[in-house]
Amino acid sequence: MGDSIADDDLLLKNFFAEVSEVERDNEVARILSCFKLNPFEYLNLPFDASLDDVKKQYRKLSLMVHPDKCKNPLAKEAFGALAKAQQLLSDEQERDYVLTQVNAAKEELRAKRKKQLRKDSASKIKSLVDEGKYEQQYERSEEFQQELKLKVREILTEQEWRRRKMQMRISEEEGRLKKDEEEQKEMWKRKREHEEQWEGTREKRVSSWRDFMKTGKKGKKGEIRPPKLKTEDPNKSYVQRPVKRG
Image (cartoon, rainbow, N blue to C red; front, side, top):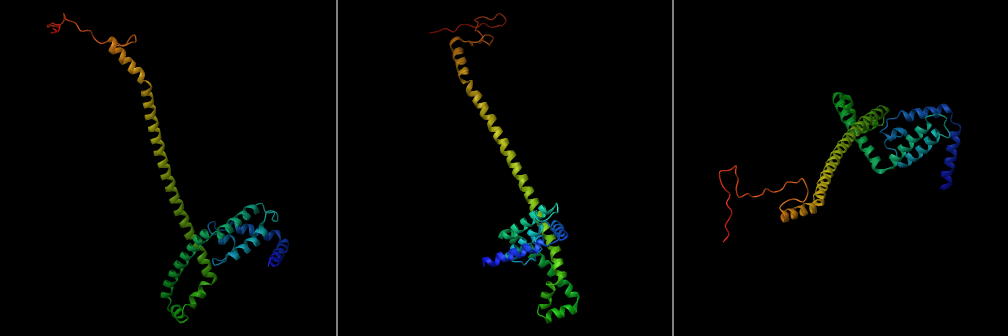
């Protein structure tokens, strides 16, 4: 088994050693013109290609555009695009996502086809007689495959746009929550600083109050003293009489 794979690789390398630079340039141009969201296009594979097909095709095309073999200045970019496509199709989740969009595209095209058949009675009768074989044959045609390719592009574009819009909304919401969190932190920071400042002057306030209670005035010069009680006030019509003690 191992010898067989080694022989295949050797034959493949010998074959591409004979590939002209024009063919390599054409492949680089093809790869870089592919629809970016469809990895099947990069590897030039049908949508029903197996994982084994993906590996073989990647090995074949990557040798053709490898920067060490291809003199095209964009060979490195094309080689990277192939590697990414192969990685996506080897990932079960990513592959299932693309195939889900492919199936959605097929359903749309089939619905469109049914409407056309209603208008074309001859095609409708032939479809009934062949018990679906007529439609299966049509779906294998180049016309249908090209329509499917374009419809898949359309659906993948719509899904990507929705994904980006959703990501944008999520980012905006995360930004708002982060801003609220920072404002809340700043508020608590100011409150904490105020409490620490108030606590820091506690001893001073207590000491000042004690001095006031002892002397009837504050200890520091320039601060307000409490008014003295007079027994007589010449500016008033009344006289403040001293309180008699029993």
